[in-house]
Image (cartoon, rainbow, N blue to C red; front, side, top):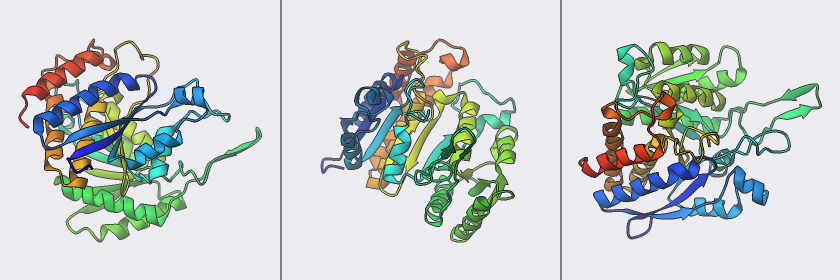
Length: 364
């Protein structure tokens, strides 16, 4: 952070609907900073993504990595296009490369429905769920130093990597989050320790680290059983921590229970750097049509404000984060703002205008 309390933000619009949800979010961030006072932003646009790869032969150029490294935080919209692939058939995923580059081991995926958004689960106890899935984000089945292999048309292999150093930091992060949230103060390890040796090792480390956090309960669940709990008894969850691939799947289920990917924010956090981005992809099928829901991007920006406030001791950034979340809640609270993924007609501009209007009048 600069001496004048200005946060430098590396801004990655990316592909598809990325640019469409980036600009409204940037405007809201500038407005909430002006409203609260005491801090501001210096925006550093960064090039990356599948479209960039198609022109330049790389999806994440060195100059964008340098800009991101020097920034106080990274705000990313969406990357990847289904028709732009590597020689082995995989899509471009520079957002994952950023996690590896900066050691962003803790993927934070909040699951909290927005008031006024149509409830997905019928049980009224599910309307007020508020839990967090922590996805290990640099190892597991995604570990870059243990890439998959293919032997012609006869066999292909993937390797799951679980290491003690990353697990210890990840579990400490999860237990600290449970303490800070002040709810049930419980962390659940979601694994498959009954089948895989790697997960038996994972769970062993989990309970070792749990001993250092008095007042926070620790338990475990097999991933298949936990998926059922997310649907049948989600109000029993506080903080759940899981492997990379399991977290990828479960966090999308969590997004669905909030109303869809357009409502689900996320963060990938390391010791020094962090990326904030919506859970959804680039949605090229609706790009340019004004239909993209910017809510997940806006809520990811609020998560960024929280993190910046904690990291730099900026009370004002934390106040701004709360104001942005209240603005979203009030914009949707009446039930009249219904986005296209839930059968409504509210597109990017309508959601932005509603949140902007409520942000102008909520107390900071």
